[in-house]
Length: 208
Image (cartoon, rainbow, N blue to C red; front, side, top):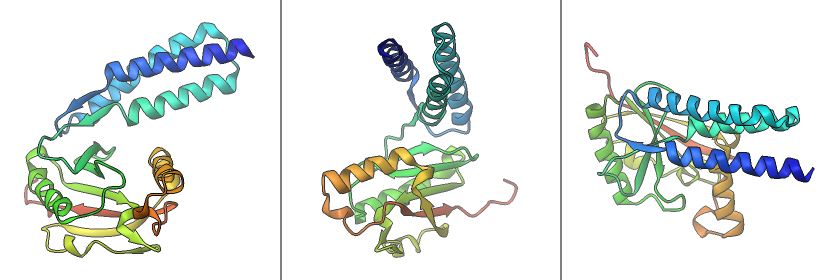
């Protein structure tokens, strides 16, 4: 068992090294998903080759590969946009779509935040973007939507829905840490298990 633990730790360290080595920042682009796919495949292949001679139990082997695929494909590309300080972007699997997050998970939605979101919407066509998805427990209070009135004047269609925690487990764990361990006041009245999601879509231009 001790040998298995050592092998597992070594494999995890290899993965972390590869992920940090291959993770890079990229401007918003239609090519981001292609780049992310290539990087994910490279990370997965190297870890697979590393695991083959180790003869680990099947459940451990499969677990490492699933974790590698999840992180390698999902978190290997960062979107770099100098205009953003309060918000950050991550690529979506859908074409011409980006996910928007608060730079700090517990930062409140302020006037400056909405102004930056408005700027982001203005910049979106420049980077071949069509829609933004904003998910946060701070968009709700006691399970009901609020804080979205300031979005209505923006030149986008707005679709509000709920987002289950299991679809973003890593973000959910981070929020749980802030709410239940750090006891951040801003999260005390927010439901983490069912967060609010706002889908902002630009009107389509004829011929596009």
